[in-house]
Image (tube, rainbow, N blue to C red; front, side):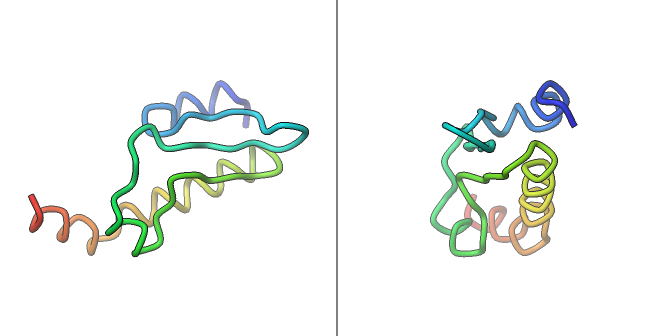
Length: 77
């Protein structure tokens, strides 16, 4: 996984940067709601390598796509 590939896949939702000294981190472009954080979503994900960061962002995407979140957001809107 290259930085360009990671940005192409997740760059609309996350700002991806190299950590100071070592590792990588991604910050959401839009802040997560308190409801989302209560259900395990994060504003920041980290990884020691780009591959690990990619796995962490994929896990975050799977959590975002759970039906409880989609249903709850529709009810709030």
